[in-house]
Image 1 (cartoon, rainbow, N blue to C red):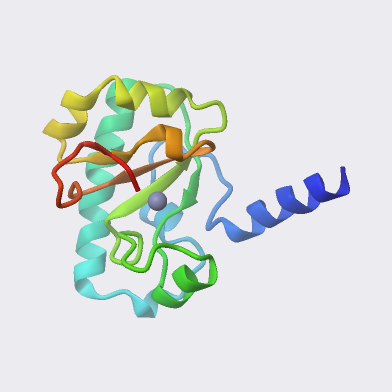
Image 2 (image 1 turned 60 degrees about the vertical axis):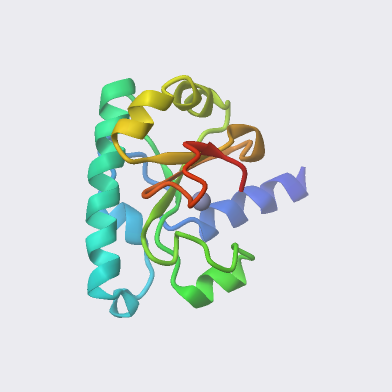
Length: 148
Ligand SMILES: [Zn+2]
């Protein structure tokens, strides 16, 4: 029980925001990190990514709100949390959304064509049990649903 509470508290503290949101804003995406580390290219990537992701979410789930569990990760933060060395989160090309029941993941997996038309790709939801990783552009393999 105590471990559960501590884990819950940790996931709350380590996420950039715990605010549910209808439209993912730049402030949701950047979280509390020091924005002076952002390059102009990072900022351009973030605006582009969120436009695509918000279009996706509004198209598929118009009345649902979402929580960003991991947005932009400054390089050092990415190391601290054990993120992939060349994670797209570092350059503002990826966002993770909370998906505790897996509903969003399976919905997205069923809408591969929409993802493709928006230039988006997701990690295979079976690899991301409590969140969904969405990125632009897709990985080099070109796979819209890919293994991390
Ligand atoms: Zn991710």
